Image (cartoon, rainbow, N blue to C red):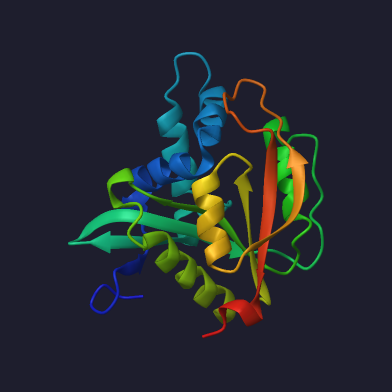
Length: 200
Protein backbone atom coordinates (compact mmCIF):
# COMPACT_ATOMS: atom_id res chain seq x y z
CA UNK A 1 0.00 0.00 0.00
CA UNK A 2 2.79 2.41 -0.86
CA UNK A 3 2.74 5.04 -3.56
CA UNK A 4 5.96 3.70 -5.08
CA UNK A 5 4.43 0.55 -6.54
CA UNK A 6 0.67 1.12 -6.21
CA UNK A 7 -1.44 4.28 -6.22
CA UNK A 8 -2.89 3.46 -2.79
CA UNK A 9 -2.03 4.66 0.69
CA UNK A 10 -3.52 4.85 4.14
CA UNK A 11 -5.43 8.06 4.79
CA UNK A 12 -4.21 10.68 7.26
CA UNK A 13 -5.88 13.58 9.04
CA UNK A 14 -4.79 15.82 6.16
CA UNK A 15 -7.22 13.91 3.90
CA UNK A 16 -10.31 14.83 5.94
CA UNK A 17 -11.78 17.36 3.49
CA UNK A 18 -11.46 15.07 0.48
CA UNK A 19 -12.69 12.05 2.41
CA UNK A 20 -15.80 13.99 3.47
CA UNK A 21 -16.48 14.79 -0.20
CA UNK A 22 -16.02 11.14 -1.21
CA UNK A 23 -18.25 9.90 1.62
CA UNK A 24 -20.92 12.30 0.37
CA UNK A 25 -20.57 10.92 -3.17
CA UNK A 26 -20.81 7.34 -1.90
CA UNK A 27 -23.86 8.06 0.27
CA UNK A 28 -25.80 9.67 -2.59
CA UNK A 29 -26.59 12.70 -0.46
CA UNK A 30 -27.48 10.90 2.76
CA UNK A 31 -24.31 12.00 4.54
CA UNK A 32 -24.86 15.68 3.79
CA UNK A 33 -28.49 15.40 4.91
CA UNK A 34 -27.39 14.00 8.26
CA UNK A 35 -24.56 16.50 8.63
CA UNK A 36 -26.99 19.34 7.92
CA UNK A 37 -29.27 18.13 10.72
CA UNK A 38 -26.35 17.83 13.10
CA UNK A 39 -25.00 21.27 12.17
CA UNK A 40 -28.27 22.96 13.05
CA UNK A 41 -29.45 26.35 11.89
CA UNK A 42 -26.53 28.45 10.69
CA UNK A 43 -24.04 25.62 11.13
CA UNK A 44 -21.71 24.26 8.44
CA UNK A 45 -22.63 20.67 7.49
CA UNK A 46 -19.30 20.17 5.75
CA UNK A 47 -17.49 21.06 8.95
CA UNK A 48 -19.53 18.34 10.68
CA UNK A 49 -18.51 15.89 7.97
CA UNK A 50 -14.85 16.80 8.19
CA UNK A 51 -15.00 16.49 11.97
CA UNK A 52 -16.52 13.03 11.74
CA UNK A 53 -13.93 11.87 9.23
CA UNK A 54 -11.18 13.31 11.46
CA UNK A 55 -12.35 11.29 14.46
CA UNK A 56 -10.26 8.42 15.74
CA UNK A 57 -13.29 6.14 16.01
CA UNK A 58 -16.51 5.65 14.06
CA UNK A 59 -17.26 4.11 10.71
CA UNK A 60 -16.06 6.95 8.49
CA UNK A 61 -12.91 7.70 10.47
CA UNK A 62 -9.88 8.39 8.31
CA UNK A 63 -8.27 5.45 10.11
CA UNK A 64 -10.56 3.13 8.12
CA UNK A 65 -9.77 4.74 4.76
CA UNK A 66 -7.50 3.84 1.89
CA UNK A 67 -6.76 6.59 -0.62
CA UNK A 68 -6.25 6.13 -4.36
CA UNK A 69 -3.83 8.63 -5.88
CA UNK A 70 -2.80 9.75 -9.33
CA UNK A 71 0.21 12.04 -9.70
CA UNK A 72 0.05 12.74 -5.97
CA UNK A 73 -3.62 13.80 -6.02
CA UNK A 74 -6.53 11.98 -4.40
CA UNK A 75 -8.85 10.48 -7.00
CA UNK A 76 -10.91 8.08 -4.88
CA UNK A 77 -11.10 6.11 -1.65
CA UNK A 78 -12.54 3.09 0.05
CA UNK A 79 -13.55 3.10 3.71
CA UNK A 80 -14.08 -0.23 5.39
CA UNK A 81 -13.74 -2.17 8.62
CA UNK A 82 -14.48 -5.60 10.09
CA UNK A 83 -17.93 -6.36 11.47
CA UNK A 84 -18.29 -8.43 14.61
CA UNK A 85 -19.57 -11.98 14.58
CA UNK A 86 -22.79 -11.00 16.36
CA UNK A 87 -25.52 -8.50 15.55
CA UNK A 88 -24.94 -5.09 17.10
CA UNK A 89 -27.82 -3.57 19.08
CA UNK A 90 -29.60 -0.67 17.41
CA UNK A 91 -30.17 1.97 20.05
CA UNK A 92 -32.92 4.61 20.11
CA UNK A 93 -30.40 7.40 19.54
CA UNK A 94 -29.56 6.16 16.04
CA UNK A 95 -31.08 8.50 13.40
CA UNK A 96 -34.07 6.86 11.72
CA UNK A 97 -32.43 7.26 8.29
CA UNK A 98 -29.65 4.89 9.40
CA UNK A 99 -31.77 2.17 11.02
CA UNK A 100 -32.36 0.11 7.84
CA UNK A 101 -28.65 0.30 7.03
CA UNK A 102 -27.71 -1.05 10.45
CA UNK A 103 -30.36 -3.78 10.15
CA UNK A 104 -28.70 -4.92 6.93
CA UNK A 105 -25.21 -4.72 8.43
CA UNK A 106 -26.43 -7.04 11.18
CA UNK A 107 -27.27 -9.58 8.47
CA UNK A 108 -23.62 -9.76 7.39
CA UNK A 109 -21.74 -10.69 10.58
CA UNK A 110 -18.03 -11.46 10.51
CA UNK A 111 -17.47 -9.76 7.14
CA UNK A 112 -15.30 -6.85 6.04
CA UNK A 113 -17.81 -4.05 5.52
CA UNK A 114 -17.21 -1.60 2.69
CA UNK A 115 -18.76 1.50 4.26
CA UNK A 116 -17.99 3.82 1.35
CA UNK A 117 -16.36 3.50 -2.05
CA UNK A 118 -16.16 6.52 -4.32
CA UNK A 119 -14.14 8.31 -6.96
CA UNK A 120 -14.24 11.87 -8.18
CA UNK A 121 -16.48 12.09 -11.29
CA UNK A 122 -13.61 12.69 -13.70
CA UNK A 123 -11.94 9.45 -12.57
CA UNK A 124 -14.92 7.11 -12.85
CA UNK A 125 -15.31 4.38 -15.42
CA UNK A 126 -11.62 3.54 -15.78
CA UNK A 127 -11.33 0.58 -13.44
CA UNK A 128 -10.70 2.47 -10.23
CA UNK A 129 -13.73 0.99 -8.50
CA UNK A 130 -12.55 -2.53 -9.26
CA UNK A 131 -9.05 -1.68 -8.01
CA UNK A 132 -10.45 -0.27 -4.76
CA UNK A 133 -12.60 -3.37 -4.26
CA UNK A 134 -9.50 -5.51 -4.76
CA UNK A 135 -7.77 -3.54 -2.01
CA UNK A 136 -10.80 -4.11 0.24
CA UNK A 137 -10.49 -7.83 -0.48
CA UNK A 138 -6.85 -7.78 0.64
CA UNK A 139 -7.78 -5.95 3.83
CA UNK A 140 -10.50 -8.52 4.50
CA UNK A 141 -7.98 -11.33 4.03
CA UNK A 142 -5.49 -9.60 6.34
CA UNK A 143 -8.23 -9.38 8.98
CA UNK A 144 -9.09 -13.07 8.47
CA UNK A 145 -12.65 -12.23 7.49
CA UNK A 146 -14.44 -14.86 5.36
CA UNK A 147 -16.10 -12.33 3.08
CA UNK A 148 -17.01 -8.76 2.25
CA UNK A 149 -20.28 -6.87 2.50
CA UNK A 150 -21.64 -3.54 1.31
CA UNK A 151 -24.94 -1.71 0.91
CA UNK A 152 -26.12 0.11 -2.20
CA UNK A 153 -29.35 1.87 -3.16
CA UNK A 154 -31.73 0.04 -5.47
CA UNK A 155 -31.53 2.82 -8.06
CA UNK A 156 -27.72 2.98 -8.29
CA UNK A 157 -27.48 0.72 -11.34
CA UNK A 158 -23.88 1.62 -12.12
CA UNK A 159 -22.64 0.65 -8.68
CA UNK A 160 -24.70 -2.54 -8.73
CA UNK A 161 -23.07 -3.56 -12.02
CA UNK A 162 -19.61 -2.83 -10.61
CA UNK A 163 -20.24 -4.94 -7.52
CA UNK A 164 -21.80 -7.81 -9.47
CA UNK A 165 -18.85 -7.86 -11.88
CA UNK A 166 -16.61 -8.21 -8.86
CA UNK A 167 -18.46 -11.15 -7.38
CA UNK A 168 -20.96 -9.50 -5.01
CA UNK A 169 -24.49 -10.88 -4.84
CA UNK A 170 -27.68 -9.46 -3.36
CA UNK A 171 -28.74 -11.13 -0.12
CA UNK A 172 -31.32 -8.82 1.49
CA UNK A 173 -33.23 -5.53 1.23
CA UNK A 174 -34.72 -2.97 3.59
CA UNK A 175 -37.03 -0.06 2.83
CA UNK A 176 -35.35 3.32 3.00
CA UNK A 177 -36.25 5.89 5.62
CA UNK A 178 -35.92 9.29 3.97
CA UNK A 179 -37.30 12.05 6.18
CA UNK A 180 -35.66 15.17 4.61
CA UNK A 181 -33.35 13.17 2.34
CA UNK A 182 -34.29 13.57 -1.31
CA UNK A 183 -33.55 10.33 -3.20
CA UNK A 184 -35.29 8.42 -6.02
CA UNK A 185 -34.75 4.98 -4.49
CA UNK A 186 -37.04 2.95 -2.27
CA UNK A 187 -34.80 0.22 -0.84
CA UNK A 188 -31.28 -0.44 0.42
CA UNK A 189 -29.67 -3.59 -0.96
CA UNK A 190 -27.16 -5.68 1.01
CA UNK A 191 -24.59 -7.45 -1.18
CA UNK A 192 -21.95 -9.90 -0.02
CA UNK A 193 -18.96 -11.71 -1.46
CA UNK A 194 -17.39 -14.83 0.00
CA UNK A 195 -13.69 -15.19 0.63
CA UNK A 196 -13.36 -17.89 -2.00
CA UNK A 197 -14.50 -15.33 -4.57
CA UNK A 198 -11.75 -12.82 -3.79
CA UNK A 199 -8.86 -15.03 -2.85
CA UNK A 200 -5.78 -14.14 -4.84
